Image (cartoon, rainbow, N blue to C red):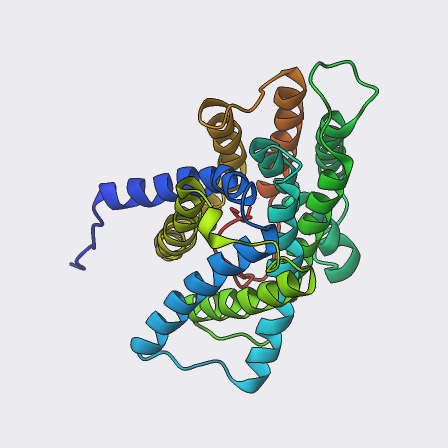
Length: 318
């Protein structure tokens, strides 16, 4: 008889709890940090340190560094994911509540579905998918509309545009991972992307003059703690839990973080961040999550996609 390997149930529960609650709470940590630290600089510090740790850890454990061609792919993805996605998320959270930012980023599966229909041709526009996309668009419309009398102010338009661009950028990166040569190790690939992304974010921060406006001595303990939380919990611990899960659980189960994280972010923002939770936020969140649920549970024959980064998101956690 073949011996069966039994994993302790607590490990699975703990890993899911981490990707659900840690990634969901990173949105509030970002909002706390960008109150005092320029957004692209804050993002650069987060991913430079996290990238160095993950990249160094994989090298120390015998993984091969990416080839020249793979570094080119890593660099392209780093621009799309870290500068255009995370950078804009950090920037937008100066203007948009953390819970709302998470809900807006939950539209990523909708944009991924559109990219598969238009560019990859791996998905067809069915009635079910069309309805799901319309519901998702309706949820965004509820959040940004100034004509609907739902109580509470609509979200800042520039912040909303930045978050939509961030979602589109992540979706494009996810599609490209299927075609670009990347390291076979997900940890090495993600560590390298974080490291290069951190460098690009630092260059962006320098170009925007953020270093001139940054004075470490006047930054509060809360802001430094938020950065530490983003690095250790949001990037390193949560990513480790995520990689462990995708090797031990079905992609469908692991993918449930896509509709748990926004709910966690809204609740954390309300209870810990003092953010408003009105009818507009509730309806917009509900519409977007229904759209995500329908899209992510649609049966489809797709090639397995490489995982560009850990959080967000990033939906990726962010």
